[in-house]
Image (cartoon, rainbow, N blue to C red):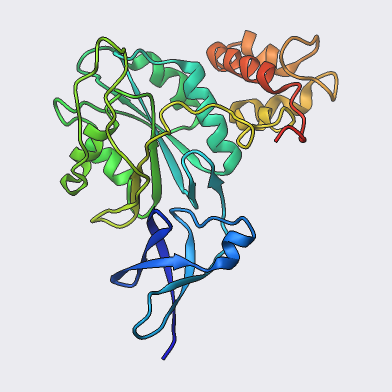
Length: 295
């Protein structure tokens, strides 16, 4: 007898997908029609399963996605936790702003977690991002400070973690829930980067509800060909620009150097962070000549 169930893809390995439906996790394969149509089920997808007696369950349908990422391959993220360390490695506001812009473009809520606060001051980062409306949490794996606050933000959401290697993502996740058992390691001084910590994209259920993923290959987002925020959309990915965008003298204003630009005036008046605007200009220069056909 055939049964149909709706579930969530927690993990995919070698053509097999592990789907949680109700209290059961099923090992499934996807129907061949997906491969023929170049559609790949992603971790985070809500799917319909067909379950027949004495046969392996099959993913029959992928339900509509609210968003998806290429790197890492995930879908339906509610929020993105960006972990930046106060030191070793030193934080880059350009990298932070690039990741935030990519999240904003996808409709994913960014959260900034600043680690290693026992080693270096972090108030300057909080002063940049908290006034804009981004949740900012200061954490220390050494003292446990901030971990409870992060747990509360994760409750009931599907969340991915990102940040440069060595910033303490896995250490933080281990403190959030020991069941994760993610490997951690000291920073390799010779390479100047953290040792590899996690091996595959996987959603872990949280005791308080929701899922979290620590994702390999998501340590340094580059706005590559499929995840480019186009120049027309880029100003809207800097949320503090929005009140000023319709006040510029010229409708075609790029908000980089033009006379009569309300955004530049807001930067001069201290209403917009100078470092945020510098990041915007750098990202605009990257994408200004981008063409849709560059695939």
